[in-house]
Amino acid sequence: MLFILLAGLGLLSFTSSHISHQYHFINIRKNWTEAQRFCREMYTDLAPVKNAKELNDLLKTITDGSYDVYIGLYRSDVFKWHWTLSDGFYNGEIFKNRKNVPYNGGCAAMDNNWKWFNDDCDSKKKFVCFNASTKYILIEENKSWREAQEYCRTFHTDLANVRTCAKNNVSDVWIGLFKDFWSWSDQSNISFRFWNFSLLKPMDRHHNCTVVMVNQTGRWNDVQCNTTLPFICHGDLKPTTKPAPTTRQNPSTSLKSTTQYRLFQNTTEVENTRSQTTQTEQDNLILVRENLTWTEAASYCRKHHVDLVSIHSEELQNRTARKATQASTSHVWLGLRYTCTFDFWFWIKNREAGCYKNWAPGHGPHGYEDCGLSGAMESTGGYRWVGRPESERLNFICQICTDVF
Image 1 (cartoon, rainbow, N blue to C red):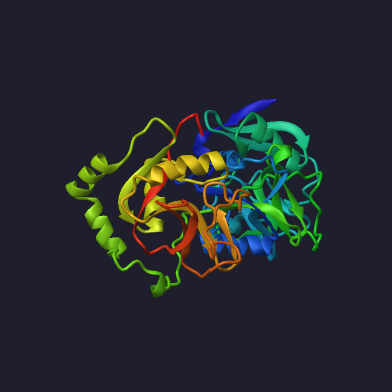
Image 2 (cartoon, one colour; image 1 turned 135 degrees about the vertical axis):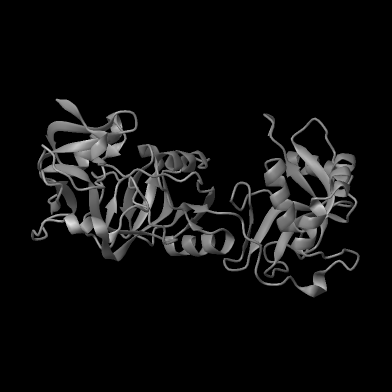
């Protein structure tokens, strides 16, 4: 039997953010600590997930059907209480409503005085769901806390959060409060969890890191952190922090600051330049004949098109070379970047090293490598790839959104 609790009781706190995380699937196998270092160097951190929508967004980035990928959830040494529906609501005031009972479980229930108490998560109780349209619903079926949450997520939104104290006519019902020892790598206070409880190892200190299981509709599992797997980063791509080597600078280029570029970008002159010099052939590549740094070029391509071009075949190399012949600089930027922390080159669009190669002698793997290098193609001759200081200003080639690529 279901009945709706009065909205005036103020049972629930339900908040959501309009800002979603930007996810990047990295198809390179690393252990969890190495993945964390990579994400912090290149983006912001390993990915947090704050709700089901973000989990769906994260799954859409995974392109190769990987079964397990790392996210930023790891086992910490501190147990914390979390509300199921809010990543920032909880504060100490709520715990004044706690009943003085010995610790006997990591899940919370509520009595008829709105005082909550912790109990064994496997014990069976009635429970209260939240639904965005009908608000608060008592489910008069006895289930464990996890079964109750699964029911609420399937038929409503989630287990309800307690916000105020008041008399009510229900007692000993599960609410959306739980305690665990999992934390996010970027220190986000996010309470969303999507475990496959049939696989989760309780208090197993050898399984301290979290993966999303793609073949289990995104359910999470805990694994040993030395397992090497692909992973998901979040945030914007960072510029390198180490200055580029001055000996590799092109003396004919003008190295403007980012601030100067942004001021210039807002003028009519740059808009006229783009309309006059951007090539608009009927394929999925476009040459932009503006002299930008590699980071500025990557930002431009992502804002106006898809990304800097990634080359994974001879056919695409030839099409990119044809675009490069029209450039006004000796080289054009590609979506190719070097990480000095891990000592390898990778394509930023697919986040993988790739098999096809067209490096000039002395460049690329086993060639000259230093922090601050990104990949460019010669615009004449053999159209080979070279590492250039990413502070240089070059034309660049973007991938545009078509059905051909």
